[in-house]
Length: 143
Image (tube, rainbow, N blue to C red):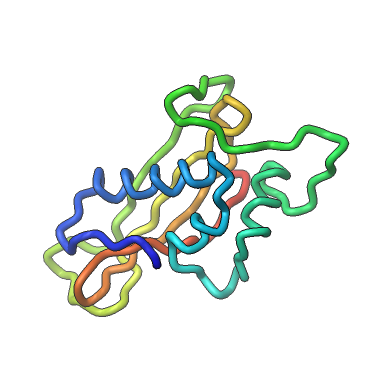
């Protein structure tokens, strides 16, 4: 079941929900991470594709004989040429939102891989629904 937040969720509440999703990835609980968000049908996400894209540093074709990347703890990641990035960009002011299933914002959240902040970024949509706010996975790739 995808995460639900109250309609008045703040940017911080939304980013905290994304951090929970990142912790699921850190624990390699890809099925739960998959279920935590709605999926953009265009990308045909599966738990296995999420894993493979992360293992391959933003590309689904990873090779086991080279370095495999894994999400690591946000609190322990070091900046090694990449800075942590987390931003919520709203498309419309809160006062203009009408309940329905609308994409009202995008989240860009860099992933910590193998102990370092990376330029692999998760893009999620913020969905404004009749009774709650939720998240939809859009992309995971290098920016």
